[in-house]
Image (cartoon, rainbow, N blue to C red):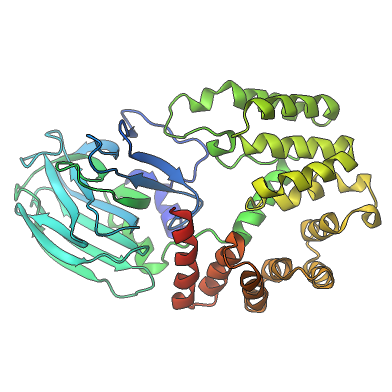
Amino acid sequence: MNAIFSAALLAANVLVSYSFDDHLIDTGPDTFAVFQNAKGHVRLDSQIRFSGYRSIELRDVAGDGDFPELQGYFSERKSGKLFFHFSMLVANPDQNLNVALAGSSHFTMSKDGIAFWLKSQDGVLHHVSDSIPKKLFRIEPFVWYSVDLRYDIAGGTYDLTVHREGSVEPIVDLKRQPNATSAPGSAVDKFSFVGSVFEDDSNVTYYVDDVVIGTEETVLQGPFVAPGRRKLFIDRWREAKTMLLRSPQCPPMLSLADFGLSSSDPAARQSPLIETWRSACAMMERHPEQAVKLFAAERSRHPEAPILAMSELMALFRTDREQARKRWTELEPLLQNDVRYGMIAAAADPARAPEERLDPDEQYFLMLWKGEYARAAKFAEEQKWPERIGDALFLSGAPAAARKYYEMALRAEPDAYWPAVKLSDVFHLLGDAANERVYREKMYGRLAE
């Protein structure tokens, strides 16, 4: 989240705040519940997000007899004003979704039931005011919308503002709208993001990020001052490097998905697999040979856990560099889209081998690791690696110079993941919203399949 949101989170007026970037997110009666008992799902997603690393993906399946739901809870508010902020992106707007705030009467059309209700129908977003669905705007696919609500509980009215990404002026700016049931004093204590609740006719896929609920207007200042931005490739690279420098024994754990586990499973954090991994990491410094064996054994039992393969590779670089190089090549198809892949060899104590004895890949990543970006760019040019030239330039703070090399890489491999991601980031930094969207949609469309 941006700096203003971060400051707001420290204040006592914030009741709820989820950017979904924490490694472990609690579920329970005081936080939120995930319901996905049929074919749909609610899960963390690291590819499509408004800010930070992750968002929540909700995917409904028509005719499966149920609907996926993210339902969150906060202390009941019976008076005063409530401020509700979230960002939402819809992959297929022709399918239906629902977002609501409600109280102790749950999601019913009664006092202390639904106070605020957004719903989509035939591609158009509506708000339900005084029991009547009223049109707001036609939803565009793969576009982020930031929603800000000011709810006057005693008066039973709300102000609603919606910003479309890339636009300064709001596309919705409504004042003093009667709440869903036109019931003054209707209390609230929960929120819900769902697909189709009543008809079971929706195949919607949509994403939610930066959910903030508070009792002061300061929690809503972020979108109007500095719109939340995506975590750029260079941010992810630098943050992973920082984490690895702090704990050099193993690759940094970025999410439970590293272990093939779901954050929606309350028992996931107690998984014996995580404890075994930590034990093996503790062996890395003094007994790397034993660590290799333990990582290899766990990897064979848990092929869905990529962090085990990366950890085994780091241990191999400490014990058998030739075998490590072979394994590194074997793992490239699995890990090439992981920001940690390129720094594994550099971080595994490169002082053990002089630079001239390293292969070209290792030399390049070692230069990046040491911050020698100009040298890395020149080396990548000698090797005819356009994307890596772009990476070195991007990391050096020259996104405009990096652009042509990413475009060159994408022309060579039109379906490649990283060049499209990085071009989207480049155009974001250059303030070119149109081109940013072109490459973002190219990326989102491929990842949504």
